[in-house]
Length: 484
Image (cartoon, rainbow, N blue to C red; front, side, top):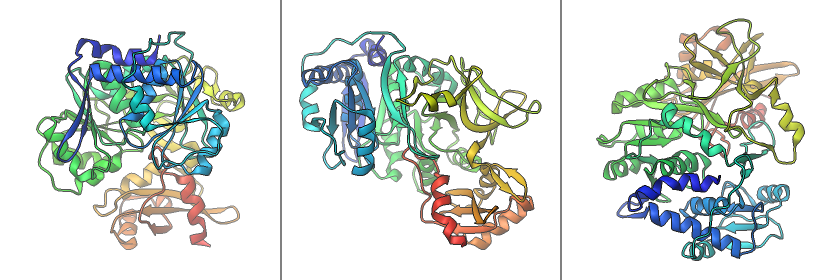
């Protein structure tokens, strides 16, 4: 099989249908499914003519432009292994990554920092020329051979190079009804950038796999304009990180008549935010939880919404368990069975780290969770984020969910900060205009004494990983000095 061929196959039945619409304020760029296929296979030809061979690695340093998904699929079509990376990485950071993956070629957009590495560089102009070349044949091979490499967020240490097989695209079928409720006639608007892996999978590859339409805001589009663009282009599903929906709720915009529901991932969805969105729009937000090693595997869906405060249910065909519990409904490590087709091949050149993720036929996600009798899973945070508050173990969401109910809280996070050898406290961070006194009063009103933060630190923004998750490691490192 070939991952790119699988993604583009449904488009053969609707060659003139809209595959990609890049929505500008006054105009739109549109690619049909036939045009998308020609661009991808022409790019595959161009990459091969540039000297790349199947199995070579292509380091992607592209900004938020349509060239990103076309180069990504073009590489996979040719049997080349793309390595997408965040355009926000600095030259020293990307130099370290390049040294690890040893790319044969680097493809670069204007203004994106490049590594100090001897690999030849192709420009975005080169890619534009490739798109019109004669189409290449899809490189075929075993479903479990290497297809692409992505990097973890690095929230708990150095980012790791995660190797995925061509079969990973087959596992994404579990999301179609287990999360999206996606149909071939859908027009899915993803509010993220082209060069974000959440956008790449949920916003582009999955709609194309069904022959549906992907709607992406043009680079530089203010978030507050997204509802108007959604209404203009008939969006039926809206996807983004929870922070997108929080900003939208602060803006004034008319209803989106065509919208059926929304999708959220990338960071935890506050129950209060979900409730506020439903009250405002009459539609639900369905959240999914995943990891770089397996994409998403827990979610709510239109057919089975997640009970409030939970991450939802295992997607159809996923085998998920909470291990090492003292009984039903008790907390424990969250795991996915090791034969899941979406599970990664391993960490590049790091068999020890790969092996450490598995135990007795299960992949350990690193999260703590508990399961309800009906199978709904509640996430309790990363195992290394669990806090010790006065001798009690407390998961950050237990506190964050309550603090987020303040209308002026903005984004909220809590973390354990050391104040003396062997002594630490819970600190709260928030970005909204609420005062420390207001936040403290809310905590006193609804949280057990040991769960109430002892330090209140307002911030302009929470530190986040390249994938948008709250970076508690950075919070701990940056603010422990505030308590000294």
